[in-house]
Structures are given as structure tokens and as C-alpha cells.
Image (cartoon, rainbow, N blue to C red):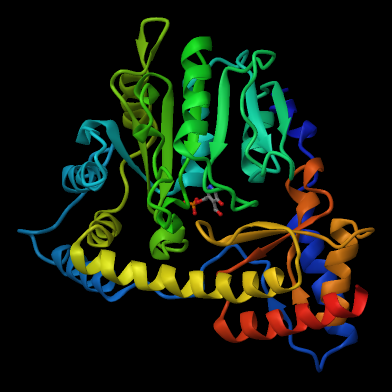
Length: 397
Ligand code: PLP
């Protein structure tokens, strides 16, 4: 009889969003007249911008005639998009060759697939609280996971020390769920650590477009030494509302080698075996994100979410509540008032203010005592939630 991958039995029940859904359903059943203010979602609420819609329509028309029709696309990405993304990096002073850019169907797909490049005996270091997929993808692959806790003292931005041992290092900056962002000096410490130990950093830059402070790095490749120790995984999901359209990109430099093997060449071999490329139509839509019109329009959408963040953080500032994020990231990570666990505060928000947030404990044990607010919701919900949050915090102080 075939033996399944028994590592699946080691996965914890993915109970976070399930439990949130159950609790909200129960609340609405008992309170049908109430409207919920949804600040728990990680999905965007604004539609694709005009420049992308125009490009998508045009690409659909291209597929209607023999002269402009495209069949299978190159597995590693269309040259026009690889070139466009390479220029996006160049405009920020980072030299990335177009052959170092791989077009994907999204960051989630890549975060799982990229593990094909590494031996199962390699260990993975996950900085917690973290995006749950890092842990689960490595459990499925049967890899040892080293959990590195972060906390309020280090601003949820822990740094490496000599006692750490890890082969793969996950860094998500700007971070989901905490919204914290590493500066260049801090990232340099991780790069030096990885180069010094032969480790590889998997840098998740899904929220880079939300960075507004000029001195903060958008890419690990802004750090000297990263070309020999890092892979960057990026996505247009939050940058340009591509959550349902699906497009991401991964950067693997040609200088990244281990045991005499080029990781870039290995990934080319992997993609040409396991994919037949991303849809022509979607790649044309993605190209438009990087054009002048697209950049102006996506920045307007991002600003909308940032204004939501401002509404919430002003309330927290006024109430003297500790939080990270909100400024250079679309998430706000708030310390729950004393004596409340993440889930207790979740219940209080739901029952007394009709706000749905995400309990920090769902992102790892050290997220206990915190709650995450997403700024991707509607303006109306955000404004009402901010008022109700203020009333609630006053009532329990
Ligand atoms: N990485 C992080 C940190 C995320 O928060 C998300 C989505 O929420 C993803 C990756 C997945 O992005 P994609 O939609 O491109 O699969």
C-alpha cells in the first residue's frame, strides 16, 4: 500500500480563521440585527486600477487573433515582465538582471515550491509571530523548525546571535502580522549571519510597497552581501490588488551558490519541469502595474489603506496603547489591555464593539496578548471601528 506523506499528521489544525469564522457566525445568529466591522481580513477591498484593467482587456484582445495570440508562456516568466521588474529594482538603485527574476502565480505558491531547492535535513528558522504558511510548508516537507520568538522589547524585530543555528531563515519585512520593518543596519546583521553560516534567507517582501520611510529597505538586495545569501519573494496581491488575479515574482541572484550548485540554475530547472508559465493576459496586467500610470494609481489605493491605518493608530495613540505597524505596513499589532488574552480580547471586541480582528496567538505562542487589525477594510467600517474601540477601551480602563 502506498504510504502518504506522514508529515501531514504533524500539522496543527489550521484553526485560527476557522475559529474566527465560527465565532462571528455564532454572534450573528444570536444578534441578527447587528452589523460586523471586519478588521480581520487579509484580503484587499479596492478593485484593480484602471491601467491594469486596460492592459488586461488589451491582452484578451491579443488572444483573439492569430498574429498576436500567445500560447504557452516561458516557464520563468515573459521577457517583457522580467525586464520590467528588473527596471523596477534598478530605479531603486538595485542591480537585478532580468534572468534573476522569476514570474510566479503568487508568493504563497513560491514559499512552498522553493523548498524543493533544499535538502530535507536543512533546518528552517521562523521568526514568530509569523505568517502561518512558513511553519506549515516546512512541516509538510519534514523539516526541523527553529522558532525564534520576538517581543515588545525588541520591537518584534529580533536579531541573530552566535547561538543561533539554521539553514533557512524566514524574514518578512514589513511583517505580517506585526507590521514591524527591519532597517538596513538590522538586515545587514542577518545577511552577515547567513553568509557567515552558509545559510539562506528567504525574504518575504509582499508588503514592500507600503514602506513610506525613505531610509527603510524595500528589498534585501539593498543590503551589501545579500546576493550570496538571499532569495526574495514578492507579490502584487497587496501592492496592486492582485489577490484574485494572482501574480508574484521571486529573485534569485546568479551569485547564490551552495555546494558548487547555482540556485538560480536549479530554479530554472525546477520551473521548466514543474510549470508551464503564468498566463499571458495576467503578465500583461502585471506589466501595467510598473508603468507610470499604474504606479500613480496603485499608490492612490495604498494611500487609501494608509488613511485607514491612520484613523486606527490615532485612536490607539490617544488611548496610550502600545502597538507596532500601521505606518510602513497595512497591519497594526496592538497590545491587548492587561489581563486579556488574545482570544478574550477578540471576544470582547466582537461582543461589545462588533469588531472582528485577528488574535495574535494564532501567529505563534509569543503572539499571545496581542491582536492584529488589518487596514484593508472599508473606510466606513474603519471609522466606526475606531469610535467603538475608543468607547470600549474607555469602559475597561
Ligand atoms: N506572504 C505574506 C507575508 C502574506 O501576508 C501573504 C498573504 O497574505 C502572502 C505571502 C501570500 O501572497 P500571495 O497572495 O501572493 O500568495
